[in-house]
Length: 341
Image (cartoon, rainbow, N blue to C red; front, side, top):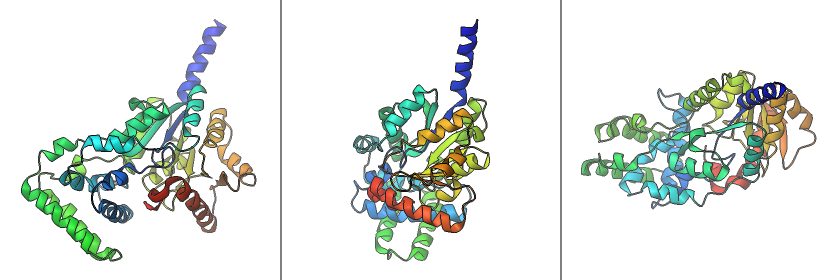
């Protein structure tokens, strides 16, 4: 009877420990969409332009637009250049894993944690990297992409329209954001709707911003938990809403090698070349200890690699210093992808 009661307690413990990771950044340094676009001539330039445009739309608060919708913005170019889903998988196959990530997830799972990934990434990439980390598709929320289905709807006139905007992106001066963004607004919110796509953002529902929050809340509800009982780990503009939701609900929101969009919305900041230290804060949460207090305690000890900062009550000066410190490690770990929002 006592043994049965212990088994029940163990089952409850397993159900109560939930952690949600962003994929690109915390777990893998590759920006898969950027790498896929780089298969196209001048694709890197187009992607970087659209990434800036994505930041602009997200900060502007455009209705029905979420941070990370860059993965929708690039779809017309993938189609007109003959990129296939197999190309996404092929590029994904060379993705590296962030140091310590595989061991971190394995140890968390051994300790009874339910590990989820919430990613803007296309499913072809997220599922492949998830498999390498020991996280199955049923524990991954990501962006579904049916390239062949979308391609079948395009006419020659549609392709011409897309080729025209591609030329305009390459011809407009790189620092003339006002002209560039006006042209892109015309294309995405007027011209493209007259093509076989219709409303691109309804066809490609990227898991970013509020959609990450919705995924996190579904995960929490499936365990009869509130967001404040979860641990979330992110690094970029697509994560700030998710991090803020967990932090404001009293949970542990960890920014790992974050940028200026993500850092202000977390309560724990970890910078470094290895993500393994996340386990210390996850286990503190599981024990019922104050993970934020732990961050404050560890600040003097971890000031380089890794670096720990407590962000609760942090003023603008401290946030700026943390962003600067994280920028260095972001470049070390993510390379060219570090410059993207």
